[in-house]
Image 1 (tube, rainbow, N blue to C red):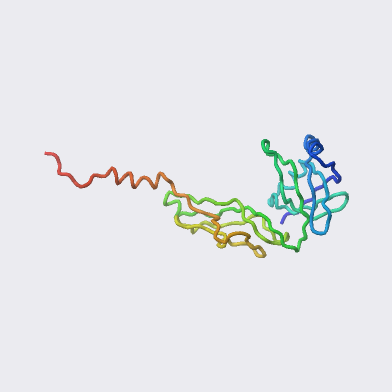
Image 2 (tube, helix red, strand yellow):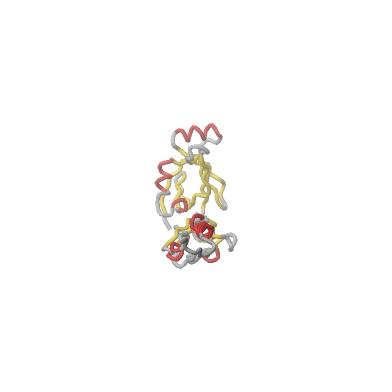
Length: 207
């Protein structure tokens, strides 16, 4: 699991107006909280945050968050975005214990080629982008890989069928569809159209 250092400024002024002023200088207001500690109001430079989360683990990167000279192991717990520009407007950091289980959302990646599905003119479709798992930060994967090689046109891969790395347990409905097969409406309509166009029987040749 990736680790990287991110520095934050402590003691930002709270309030909407102050937060807007921070964002206008490309600084994001935020908060750090966790078990056994009082929440700390802080701010981080937008560029520094972007660099810190640019590794393979993305938003699940384990951060060494430095605040007022003290380092906290932390993850990004929640991001708030501007409703129009979609830029990050506020960020919540959660202090973590590397040996204590947490629940995180991990992206999925499909691997392989489902030849049986393609032969039917259909395609494999991920029903979700990520899966929530319970694991320790030390064992948290960057992604969950799902092999679709042996899928057929009628198959559905459900949550309880997804192979997870050691130390990870899926959170959610075991029957939740994770990967499905999409059939082409055009392909499905062709047999019906062909039947409608076919003659009722062989007619004698015109003399």
